[in-house]
Image (cartoon, rainbow, N blue to C red; front, side, top):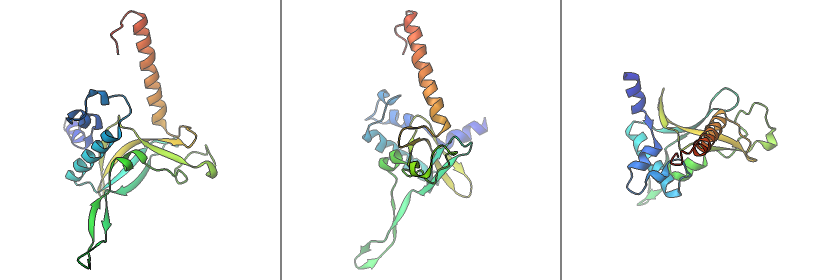
Length: 187
């Protein structure tokens, strides 16, 4: 039971945070999020992660190579602006909805198992907003953001997307069967 409590402490559920917000309702489940909702999740995730001592984040992908891909970045950057003629370094938060949605746009450094040549290496990491973000502890604490990997042409390069598509298809076909059997209220 202690292990579950520890995992729950280190997991961030985007849907739960959207439903807890006054601006967002249950319609957030199972559909594409609006930019306002993405910004709200990014802000909540940043505040939550910083309260847990996290300084870095990574988009966490399971490609078809049986390994994980992790692209690390910091939640902040240094601002060397001049105030009153004196240069001073200050940290500013740089994690927002745009970063959360965009992920990595250049897949040339991402293992792909020989599925494509370097000229076709453009790939996109896409945040999976239906999965919990979580903190991995090690030398430092890192927020892991579950993501999926696609080529520029839409070819799937990760294991998770196949499972999500199969799950969605199974749900659709199950609902179709239930409707045929007269269960018209099933959703």
